[in-house]
Structure formats: structure tokens, C-alpha cells
Image (tube, rainbow, N blue to C red; front, side, top):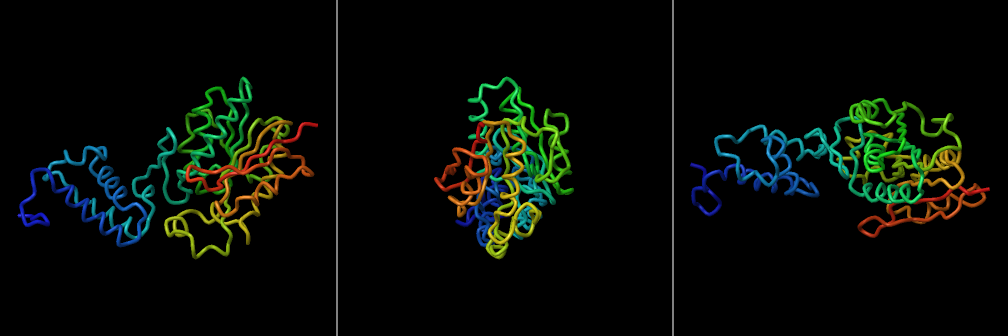
Length: 293
């Protein structure tokens, strides 16, 4: 009979919880940042129950495939690749190899953008999401700004597969294009341009978490020696697409605070360029307004 750490036989229905405890330790030893959460989330996924219902799984129903999932996470495969799903604001997205997994910090970027669009008092705001990846940002805006017209742009074929899967049957219009040259037919008409582009400097490669470095597409991570190459290109795209008074919102690394607003300068046709903090009070995204002539 299986023994508990104190030498007593476990109480009924406790096998899964005991395995979760062991899995938590294994993940912690492997350097996984949130070992308890991930161990419980994988148990929930494998057994088809909510995390709060794990104690209800009978001993006889324990699924040994749980340890296969734990081994993959122990090897630092992203949790979302194992479960095939990622949660972003009010969305559940399909994700897997070939697409950047949306991060919680991006939710605050989208929250600011939603508030800004609502404040515009435009009946059917026109929004463009550049470098859409899984489609998370575009879908959140379409869902939370109900009368918006949302276009999403993605260049990478692998990411495009997942964006198609997530946007199919929605109001989001997906475009396979380079963000620097996309959507010339919308020039001067867009109310909001938003992007979570690649912004990691190439010199930081070895410091990137294994989940991102070894599993996210390189095109979604790195952008030149200082990480700002694509953002410089997107500045021109945003200026081309936006109507006078329209807004651009660009996510960046917390170490790039102060650098990105300087790309959106007055002599390039911008006003009110500023940085904004995330929920941890670290600089996370920059905004600017296209000048009104």
C-alpha cells in the first residue's frame, strides 16, 4: 500500500494530490518558475477536471500520462504547449509549437488600448494588430470593443496557422503580410495601431528563459542588437496607417523604458509619446498620438 510521508496510509481519493506534491518538487528542482501551479494545471488537464476539483479524482482514476506531461514540463517545454491552450484576458486560445505564447503582462497593454479606444467615441473604431502571433491582442479587442473592425497581421507561417485557428469564425480579419508594409489600403484611416513585436536584443540570447528561447519562434523574440529594429520599422507603419489623432501602442521590454518613446518624436509626426508601467510598476509599453495637422 502506498504510504504518506508520515508513514500512514493516505486518506481516500488522495493519490492524485500526493502525485501533484511530488511533481511540484520535481518542477521546482528543474527551475520552473511556478512549480505548484504548473503541477496542478497539468493534473487538471490530464484528468479533465478543474484545478479546484483535483481532490475529487478517485484513486482508481489516476492517469499515468500525468507523469509524461510532467516530464515535458520538467524539460522546460512551455506549459501551454503541453495543454494546447493559453488564457488571455477573457479568452482561451489554441497554441503550440510555432507560435509565441501570450504573456500576462501583455494584458495590461491591451487594457490600456481598450480604454483608449472607448474614449475616442468612434462608432466603429478601426484597429490594426501588427505581429499578431496567436491573435490574442486582436481577439481581445474585438471581444471587448464590440463594434470595432479589427485587422491582424502576421508574417510567420507557423504563427499564422495558430492565428487562423483562433480567429476562424470571428470578426477579426487576418492578413499574411510583413508588418512594415501591410495594409496600404487602410492608410490614414486607422484609429488604433497596436503591437507586441519582437524586442529582445540578440546579445541577450543566452539569458532568455528556456521556455521562450527553445520553443517560441525566433522571429517573435529577437530584433537586432538593441532589440528595437522592428519597432523602428513599425513607427513608420503606424504613422502611415493612422488617421490624424490616432494612437499607437507598442509593447517593449522593461529594460527599454524611456528608449521607445524617443522613436516617436515630434519631428516624425508624433505627439504625447509616453511610457506606461505594467502591474508590477515596470515600464512595459509606449504610446503616441499621430499629430493633427
